[in-house]
Structure formats: C-alpha cells, structure tokens
Amino acid sequence: MWIKHNRRLLGKVLLLLAILLIGGVTVSGCVGRSPPKGWSGAIIADDTLFLASVEGKLVALNTSDGSRLWEVSLGTSEVAIYGTPVVEGDLVYVGGYNGRVYAISSSTGDKRRVYPLDDNLEPIVGGMVASQGKVYFGCSDGKVYALDAAEVYKEWEFQTGDKIWSTPAIDGETIYIGSFDKKLYALDAIDGSKKWEFDEAKGAIASTPLVYENTVYIGSFDRYLYAVDATNGSLRWRSEVEAGSWYWAKPVAYNNVIYAPNLDGKVYILDAMSGYEVGDAVDLGSPISSWPVVVDGKVIIASQEGKVYSLDTSNNQVGLLANVGDGGEKIYAPLCAGDEVVYIHTQTSKHDTLYEVNAKTGVKRELWSSSLSSK
Image (cartoon, rainbow, N blue to C red):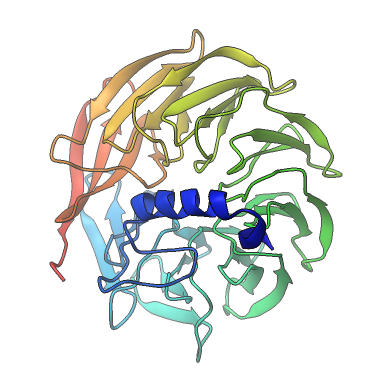
C-alpha cells in the first residue's frame, strides 16, 4: 500500500497539508474542531465572475465594476470549497469538502440540483471541468465521476487506487487526472473506460495535468515533472532537475516552454519537447501553490506570501507586479485571467478578499471582501 511503503513521504505530505489546507483537510479525512476553510479560485463566464468564499458561499460579481450580483450559502452549515467553480450552460457547479456537488443558477443564484441527493461522498478537494453536457470531478474516495450537467445525475464512475485531489483536465473526448496511487489516468469522457494509465511516477499526484501539443505534463510529490504522450501514455521525458519540494500547482505553457511552479518557491523553466532547462529556475522565496496564468506573453505567478510576479517569457526575467499581502493575506487559490487583468483570491484568519490586478501596470483594486466568523 502507498502508506505502508511511503511512511516518510506521508509524514512530509501531512506537514505540507497542515500548512496548505489550514488544518481543514488531512490524508485521513478527519476534521478538527474548527470547520475547514476553502480557497476557491475564480472563473469568468459572460462578464460574470464566480467565486466561492472561504466560508463556502458562492458569489457572482460583475467584472466591469465589481458589483455583487448575488450570493448564496451552499448548506445549512459552512461548506469548504477548495476547487474552482465551473460553468456549463446556465448552471454553476462547485464540489464541497462535505462530499456534495451543487448546481446553482448562474443568473439568479437559485439552487437547482445537489448530488448526491440523500447521502454524501468523501471530501471533494479538486475542482471540476465541464464539456459536452457533462461535469467531471475526482473525489477522495479515489473515484472519477461524470455527471449529467442538466439533471446532475451520475452517468459513470471510475475507480483509481487512492485518493484524488487533482482537478481533471479534458482534451477532446479524453479526461486526464492524477491520483495518490502515483498514477496518471486517461479516461474516455463518454463512458469512463480507461484508455491508458501512466505509472512511472514515484510519488502521489495531486496537481492538475496540463495538456499541450498532444502531451500531458504532470508534477508529482516525487519532485519531478513528467511529460506523457497524450495518445498512448508513454513517457516522453522526466525533468532532469529534481525540485526542492512537491509539485502542487498546475504548470502553464507558452511558446513551447513549460513553466512549472513548485512548493520550494521556484518556477522551473523547461523545454516542452525535451524537458531540459532553458533558463535558471526563478526563485520567489515563498511556496507556490496557486496556478499561474499567461497574459500577453507574461507568466503571472503568485507566491503564498501574497506577492504577485510577472515573468517575461522573452528573457525569463521576473519582476514584482503587485503585493496584495500587506495585511497578512495569503494566496493559495489558482489565479484567474481576464481582459489584461488577473483576479487573485486571498485570505487571512479574519477575512478573504478578491483583488483585480492589471497585468501590465500592477495597479490593484479590491473587488470583494468578506469577514470570517471567529468560530
């Protein structure tokens, strides 16, 4: 078993998760006295930005002026949301740490559907993807689920060998997702059948795959990044450099270069075809768990300590774009790119805030903030 043969790694992962998940999620699935606090990223659809608050409310904001369109509590008690919402049709979907999926009207905020109706799954930590009338997600029970997007009933499930905290990636009719069983899976999006599995990683996979030029790029807790043939699952390369910590954030690609953030505080810059370093790793001095985004040839990266950087892909030079951590704000959530702006969800023990930062000038404004309960 993974735990039996990797006790040393498990101890490090537990320490990591205690920091990352603010005590809300553990490998054993236990919850302490305080309710877990999520860190949802944001998503934009039809000039509306959707975000789950740290205390589990789904919020809709107008992207032009930041005005709040609606806000809804997902449950009778707090529901921690770690994954970014996804929009399909006229519904917004989020998965909760309480093991339920919520479908909310994107225009009114009315609750439309809940899955499952009469029970709860194991905690849902990763986000969801939607395509062709289905919504896909992984669960801590080790299963990948496909739901009918309109009626929110289960169409199929696929069992892996351990917990899934990764957000799936979809390309065409294939779903790619990693598991704590150290494997990357490619599943048929229509019926859930397995196309292939990649089993050469030596550590759990919690990061989200990047699909680029018929290759799947995935980071592992073994501190390496892997490039896998998207068609047959064969290894194309493993990064020569061993990172100083685990890969949690999803990498990004631009102009045949992979930019892979790591919890050691560095961004590794690798040739997409060979895996060789094409530039020295950029050290931001603070762990990176937030997904970066690419805006106008710049890779925008956020460190956990609340600083936002712009990496120029033409010369791999990095500069501080904005500091949203003056008040102790931490950044764990994935970034969201809009029209020349980046949306950044931060949190402290007292409040969570959404900032809009101009990707060129670094000018920031606060779009939304919510005070947290003291319990």
